[in-house]
Length: 142
Image 1 (cartoon, rainbow, N blue to C red):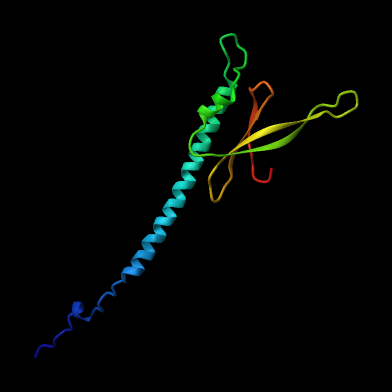
Image 2: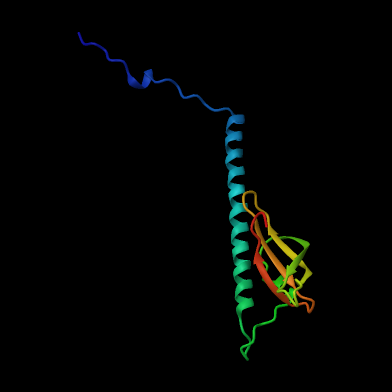
């Protein structure tokens, strides 16, 4: 007589089906992670594009070879993406004059792109004439 071998398919345990709530939680978590990655990526790209366009415009020359003047309106046209604007007062120290240190206070407009993990900020200092004096990347803690 022949021995009957057990059928391997019949011996397998049936797969446990996940409940609707479990699947909803897993896919919800994946969706949240993807949204965070999207926000971080777009903030970084918009910050980099704005900084690059500001740098190009600030370093450009007019037909006569003089540095190009940028107004705040020109700068506003170069800003890409959603930014949060804030104003702060900064003190700029100059070279000593007749033994005394010189300094003046100026307003700095800070552009911040929303991010959870990194600070994407550009500081714009506009002079009394309404022209952009300089801009800078603001690092965390400064």
